[in-house]
Length: 182
Ligand SMILES: CC(C)(COP(=O)(O)OP(=O)(O)OC[C@H]1O[C@@H](n2cnc3c(N)ncnc32)[C@H](O)[C@@H]1OP(=O)(O)O)[C@@H](O)C(=O)NCCC(=O)NCCS
Image 1 (tube, rainbow, N blue to C red):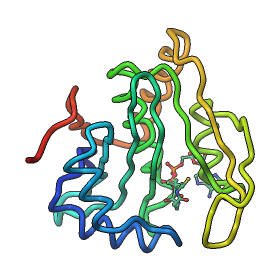
Image 2: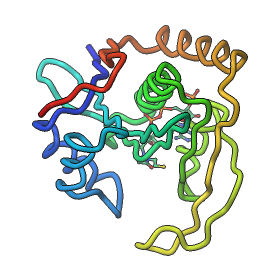
Image 3: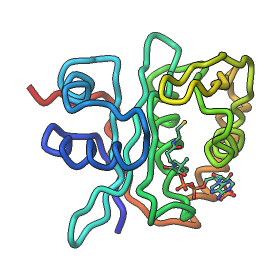
């Protein structure tokens, strides 16, 4: 069984390890502590398989007024291609829409075709190319925008979510507000 839920402070060491295996520019434990415990705009989530409970993916978004900015997303290498990354992205968009987002933004390496396809599936479009955005290899980034989360988008989003839920069974435990752990 798969569960999508908010990240808890005790998840951070495992998430940091997964982050380091997923990205050349991984976030530090301190960054995760800030995002999970202090940053009220930040919604950090994990995807977990039960028995034994194992975190297989994580993602986050910064929700500020009506903008949601996808900050990170990764699935462990051996679990990719099963719809799990889509669960994370759709989960963050779903929460953001429920909390009032009207548009979404993100940056992605121009060579990351898999992630770009995932974002396009949810109607993100490339609006700008930022030169030398990534410090590790000076790769350019595409800025992608999902503009106009209106009634039409919400209907298409609901269809996509329904198809995803037919394909992969998971429990969505994201509450309507951001939980606090202090
Ligand atoms: C990007 C990532 C999160 C996608 O997660 P995933 O679980 O592998 O993707 P899913 O199985 O949910 O696939 C969702 C969509 O992504 C695209 N996709 C997935 N695998 C792909 C592949 N091998 N080639 C091209 N597109 C692919 C497809 O559009 C797919 O939709 P479809 O199933 O309808 O074809 C995952 O590959 C990952 O963790 N990559 C390393 C970290 C990273 O690059 N994160 C993005 C930073 S911007």
